[in-house]
Image 1 (spheres, rainbow, N blue to C red):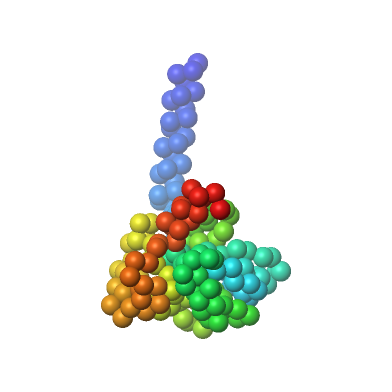
Image 2 (image 1 turned 45 degrees about the horizontal axis):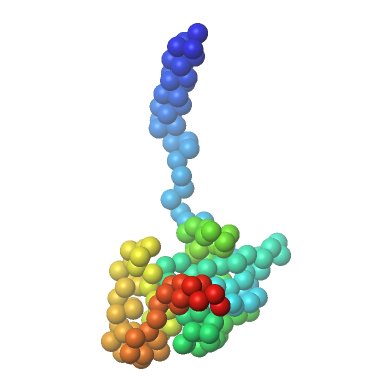
Length: 172
């Protein structure tokens, strides 16, 4: 009896796979999910809160970049720069993922301007190459480094990941 159920389940699974391949049902939409809303607060240089049309609040973390933390060199300047770019404005988010804290990871646009790229271009965020392969962000960071813009004006800037790690290890 178990063998018969096993064979039957294999046949049904195969039939479902063939059906979805033939009809195209079940295929994922290749267009990224997008969200639109108004920025109502900016936490730091890579995180803000979006108020959606249905009055839902969502935390958004800019995908593929890492900005200086509060208390870190250029942390305030990075937050203020992002605030100037997007606070009170309508922002469209191209959602890439959700992080462990439930924040939306995405690429943010204001009037066609890519905020993720602007933060890196101006030397106020690192390109997070450990998680993402993005030649444009890499080139923008290299250009900001050559020009010694903001964080790159320092002799040995500390990556925010290291800053957070050191802060945890020191119990602060």
